[in-house]
Amino acid sequence: MNTPLIDPFARAINYLRISVTDRCDFRCVYCMSENMTFLPKKELLTLEELDRMCSAFVRLGVKKLRITGGEPLVRRDIMTFFRGMSRHLETGALSELTLTTNGSQLEKFADDLYAAGVRRVNVSLDTLDADKFARITRWGRLPQVLRGIDAAQKAGLRVKINTVALQDFNEDELFTLTDWCAERDMDLTFIEVMPMGDLGNEDRLGQYWSLKDLRAQLAARATLTDLPENTGGPARYVRVESTGQKIGFITPLTHNFCESCNRVRITCTGEIYTCLGQEGHSDLRGPLRSSEADDVLEDAIRAAIALKPKGHDFDYSRQQIDGQVSRHMSHTGG
Ligand code: SAM
Ligand code: SF4
Image (cartoon, rainbow, N blue to C red; front, side, top):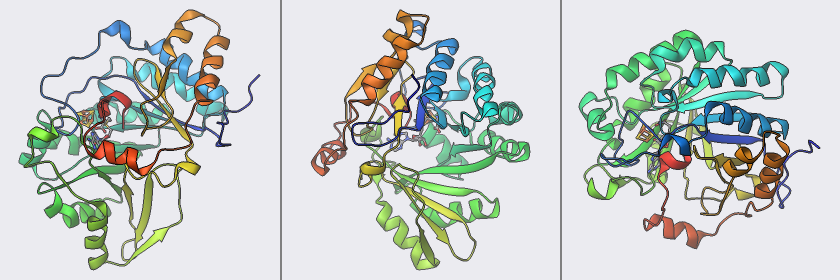
């Protein structure tokens, strides 16, 4: 019975974000510590299991699939998975297959991604200064990412840049980044930093920069128009009237829009988190591995969706601001 996924609060679940690895070739200070211990391989969903998992969600009405990580493009043979998912685009069951990446491997994979039906990618980039880039990502190198962005655009992929807003780090680049994106016809989204990774030890880099302030700085320079667009998540958008550029603001800790939440997240070990702001989760790997038929998995998915909370209150967010998030962003993939 393929009735769509509707949670107890009548929200249709049509967007799945899935992490395909906990590993990464960068060590961004706000995301990871320098010495990370990664999961043993057997804990991860195999490529075949990822395919089964995502296909089950597509059967149950998921229309948009975002692949994330860790860094999704460092997962070995990940293009096999992307190519597999393209069959759901071909049938029309899936409307969009996309990914969030640090860009380091885009030069290598942009054409393959396009061939698999990917049309848009989010690339995370916090600075256009090569030294600062090396400092914030520890292991990343800016020219490689810029070549990746070039390759993506050349391949026909629409690129959106995601920038984590960090006071005393990229505050001085607000206009540089905005203009650089506008010149290259790329939308730009700012993300409010959440206290994770090694941020506490890197306080020179890690000052919290409120997106309200960032927006005010942009508004002082150009006319911004609020866009009614709502993607069912914590992002809000404005248009810069002079250039037509779209700028987004993601405040993960401000969940004023829980009533329209359409998404769930799956970790690389097959845990489903139905709310980014709550710790509650269910295991889907056990049901997936317990049977070759998919009905056990589908029942487990429905049971998990039935537990999706209505939302979470401000006090809970406050606890998170105080640093009580026990998950790393690379665990749920942001
Ligand atoms: N490796 C890929 C990348 O960097 O785009 C995908 C995974 S990464 C965890 C997804 C997004 O989460 C990135 O845009 C990253 O900047 C963001 N992120 C990581 N840690 C964060 C934090 N502590 N606060 C806010 N955003 C964070
Ligand atoms: Fe890797 Fe992305 Fe985390 Fe940076 S934000 S360490 S690129 S997973």
